[in-house]
Image (cartoon, rainbow, N blue to C red):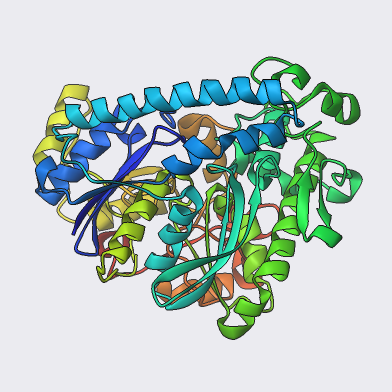
Length: 515
């Protein structure tokens, strides 16, 4: 089967993915072509065209197009959602519902027009609408190589669901529990990201990076989000979290004036300072606390059987949380979709349909699924830019020599990575043993806060020695404690809490980077 997945326009981070007979041929985000971060509200036109080109197929060859949203739920069940989130006010709920249905019609036309512009005949297209969190779950489970696993999917929210717990067995995914918005762990974290002066939907990883500098015990978050034992769920207080427009402290923000009154003036600037480092620490602790409660409440029985957990959704990009999950006594194997956020849902929708069609799915052992460029194309770009250049006979040795001298290397080879992490094909490289390397990259190249951590690429043969485990970690999705033997040898990639977010490099999947 030839199946194309499209993530957009209902979510963010539009992308496209193509599978042919159970094999992933291509997967890429639209932002990689238009250079607009996240490209919210766009259809992934260039990503679609690239996928078709990479597969050597025409639009008419595509058997199914899969979207990671259930149009049926969006269309038929939204009143329930609006009624609940607007405090049971029918008139406001009806107004919101009417606007939503109008938007859905516009989006349907947007989709049809986009597909037509890409060469599809809309009268012949077979579209599959896959529930958002099922697509996330599929993006993790089917590529994990596991026959059975507990399933966890958490993000800001899908059609109605914000958190999904379940299990997978023999190629099928089963739901155990769904928690609906507005009780959303992802929206809680995004709201605190907003309050802490970062861009929600983009800067959550900065909150995670700031958290180890603070003391979580100094800030009580229980009134903002807490666990309810008798109901076996969590609750987000919508007087604080992702508030409606009438409660917002200022236009464009999703935290309330009430939050500002209690926590103080929202953070501005780049410096690490009190009380904001403590608020970040408390935010991260609350995320971990609630997620582990969900695991113990709804997944423990399954985990005791086999120890396998598959995790996806935007919250699965939180590597510090993932470390806590891997520390759980009943989790032995943790597999996280490297593109766990909404962009990865295009691939999740594709693989969900592929599995239904009976295709045999291959385990995902690399993420090099995007565009690549020939030496001639690269040389042409260098000439146009005016940069001086020369060819090296042994590019790996040349790069290694520069790194040993303390130089910063831009490493560009092969196909672009799928997902938000640079994993050896589009990477900025520095020597982690030379102090000041991280500050140099932050200040001159990345132009970002000087407290932000960097990540090590580690040869597979040395992984256990450096991070103390042989658990798979090819995609920088889990933080590990650096061993005492190594943490002082590689200070530029060890965070203030002693952790690092490694990529374990395997010669089979990236021989040139491994060399």
